[in-house]
Length: 435
Ligand code: SF4
Ligand code: SF4
Figure 1 (cartoon, rainbow, N blue to C red):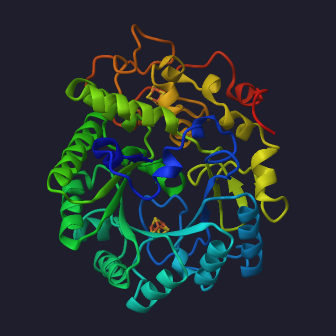
Figure 2: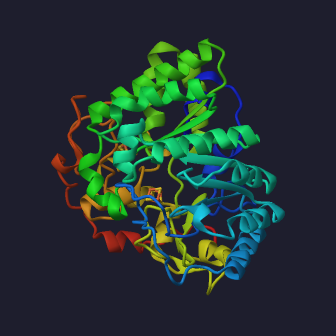
């Protein structure tokens, strides 16, 4: 997660301490010394919408075997004992769980900041009040475009208006709330309109998500932007953050799920404002790029632990059988060992990239979805070879060296065969990983 606002303006925002704490990048098991990871819990698969990009392939029905209230309380106790700073209740639709407020209150009691990732359509004025009263730190509401685009994408007419009502109800209740917008080739032209909506509605925060191909979303490989489109939308969003700042508006804009964004921003500013660029570089180094399996983890509705919510086809254990801390710090699975110190395992051009320390090889779910190799290159990296400091074609390079328009994912060549089989690389447990 890259805070463009923080990078471009230097203004302090809530949550910065999780992203930019000195020493964070050297951790193996959490956000900082003595603390566990931020955990996304898909507390239910039930959902009243049916979005095309849904990684949990949720439907409007009851799913069996989900954690009961008692089991969920025990799981939250485990996280409290591990000093987890934030528990993000996601879904499905988390508000479809009848005990959601009880569980959020329990997290707060255990010293964990509960946050909600919701489609917002169920948030009435009364519910917004209750959400604030139990101490939910933040509510992120998804909108994937303006009315027509959003409703087509979300599969339910009226979803836009109901989500907007949910946002207004949160604001009226004094509940901290913001937007979530997943960028794809269908809504690319509406990123600017979402920023306009922020201004019109007095919304203070927006997270722009890049697509991660997983679950039902794996068919979305073909819905992703070309590299050229990604660069254009980045430029557009950066310009708007600068404009907000000039106008004196306190609007927080974050980019999520593509760690090439930070490098892109730095390179853009290296010419324009070298002093600001140096400061950005320092923050990016502190953050260290992708930290799935380290400072960020996922638990699904049945208690299975995963490196992140896009990698649910790899299970590391179950909180019904072992504590979350034990699963996270004494992994039985070589894949988790690999993630904790992944640099030498990465395939493609990441190995030779000048920015590996800032990016950490980006998202494994996308790399695996396209190359079939968990450690394969992430096709959503939109930087040119030249920008990555790669001179001449490296084995495994995508050959984007001319700074030309990127290809859509399905047109991109698979990474060349690695010297060692993926499984063998995964099983090289790095000796320096903390136990
Ligand atoms: S609202 Fe969220 S959980 Fe529901 S279908 Fe859409 S992406 Fe999936
Ligand atoms: S080449 Fe790899 S390490 Fe470099 S920016 Fe792209 S994804 Fe990150």
